[in-house]
Image 1 (spheres, one colour):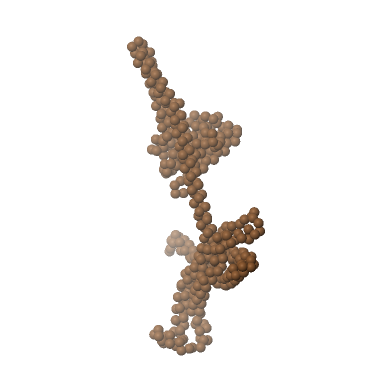
Image 2 (cartoon, helix red, strand yellow):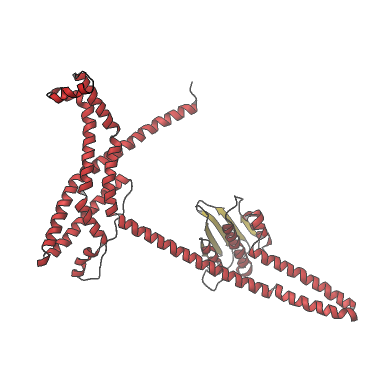
Length: 443
């Protein structure tokens, strides 16, 4: 008795097979009608385009040729529109309407001349003039293969009604057969099987021959323009990221310089003064000297703490060693406002992404502690399909902004430098929600 799994697999394969065959038959029908219809369309296109074009060229000397040429361009454009619609089923996707040059604000004469200066219009005309060549080749192949398949398989039903000429008797004998009617049926049946077995690929190749010729002339410029636009957009994004990285680095260096100047540097200056005073007091007042040294030791510890805090701002060791989840946990524990942290553990990410996410949370918590007057903060870091989503929200007074001159401007530069997007919702009196979307490498 077959297993349930084996029965399920067999039924699935049986259900998939007709769908697969149906796809072949559907594509075969699409390609066949595309080629068969393309042949008469090619005749119409070459007659109209050639006649109108050369008539226009021949009568340009008396100016009547110009309107005829304009009309030829628009006729070719109409035929091209029809062909683009026919290309969709062959390739399994729709082709957008290309860009045609236009001058809306120009006068009537200038608008008449516009098609003559448009590259796509000339490609449409070339397709109308020369599409008959691939159409004829494709039409001959498709008709020959369909005729061979249908005629060979059905010859036994109607072949007896045809008169037998000398060639009909000689061919089986040349092949080593007796030349009887049954032998002829077998030969034609074998030929029909051959044509039927290769019918799909021959028809598909013939349709693609005609379709690629049309696609190259009717959609090539549009595809090229789209690729150029995509390249320009990518270049602009790269330039914006570069500028944001430079700005973020400059902001971080200025902040670091200010923090060092306002913190450890001032403490070191005071430490040097205290040690100098203690040196003088040792000879006259040892007790006061010891008190001064003790105070200097306290200043030293505070200075070390500030330097450690600054080093965490540059490259937190816990982030490098243990990952983003551990670093955010430590960051939440140091915040003066209660933090509800939702940061599940996942695999290590790109160091730049982890660093950016850490600084988004760190800078946000710093701003909340300094300016928001909030009672609670929610921090969420989630791995999504398109990247890493970082969200920090509080119930404070709101009013935060990404505009230049505000505290979050540097954070926005840092996020954009990583290829991400930073969004802030902070209505006055309604709290603040900061969301950063960071792309991951390979997504």
